[in-house]
Image (cartoon, rainbow, N blue to C red; front, side, top):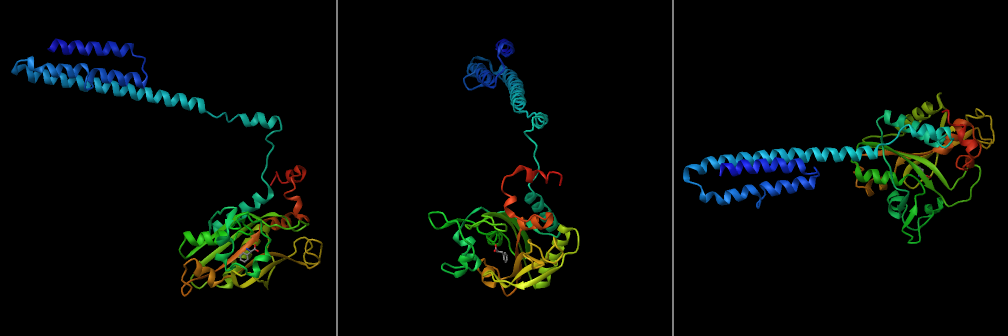
Amino acid sequence: MLKKIEQIKNDFYKALETACGTQADLSKLKADFIGKKGAVADILKNMKEASAENIREIGQHVNRLKSEIEAVIDSKIREAETALINEKLKKERIDISLRDSLTDRGLCDAGYHPVTLIQREVEDVFTSMGFEILDGPHIEDDYHNFVALNIPEHHPARDMQDTFWFSDLQHLLRTHTSPIQVRGMETHRPPFKFVGPGKVFRNEATDASHEMVFHQIEGMMVDRNVTVSHLIYFMKTLLSEIFGRTVEVRLRPGFFPFVEPGFELDIKCLICGGKGCPVCKQQGWVELLPCGMVHPNVLKCSGIDTEKYNGFAFGLGLDRLVMMRYGIDDIRHLHGGDLRFIRQFKAY
Ligand code: PHE
């Protein structure tokens, strides 16, 4: 019996040498030797033949052999797995030096779009003041774009923004970033403050100051005892950071169903310094930032206790901000796809 065990051991090592080392091969080898119908199991079946005093000794030998075979095979399987992963990684390796050769051929001569650049700057200023950054979908539903913002069906304010509707008349391309407010309130409990940048879409004719697709960054802060002075403080801080100098602002009343009171925040024209020019339409002031104190209906609709909390919201036009910063007098330059225009911003 002991001889037989020794024989199995020898057979095993021989078989291991000739096996080709794949996982499947090794698993088969394992089954052949220590599986339920393997060589070792056969010995156990024939134990009856052994005399009582031998049984103990044979048992110990068999168990030792079993553990040995198991350990050897398992370590080989692990080796095979590692080799497989390494091979896969080798194949998936990315050649990061490729970019250079593309640049040589003028194919990767890229820079960021000025709207992206200003969006990042605005985000940086707000994150430094403790605001979170949220995102939202371009395709919105009627509820998030209108209803939850205190603009029910048939409300005349729906006509303030010309909307691209989908044929189901339930979905639309968001006309403003304000639905991000609604989505933010769905996932946050006060106090909170966040901004949400992104593209917005309006079904209207284009001219020097209107585009069908443009960019806004929405902002919202909800806490106890929020006042208009908080709103002015945050807006003035932002604009001074972006323009690198103290910017003069003024508030005029403005109507938006989701804020009460609502304001239009204007800044003194940075192009003409307030004297009057085509950009400020000879007014000396540029309308930059609609904002206001969040209407209680909007908070209530999202389940916020208006006895305890209130807040402010704003919707800053990023394209107009770029225009003011660089003295661009026609919004259509920004998304017209003329590379000569866009390349000018590469250095920034
Ligand atoms: N969503 C408004 C618009 O695009 C702007 C706005 C946002 C006004 C937040 C007030 C508060 O016209």
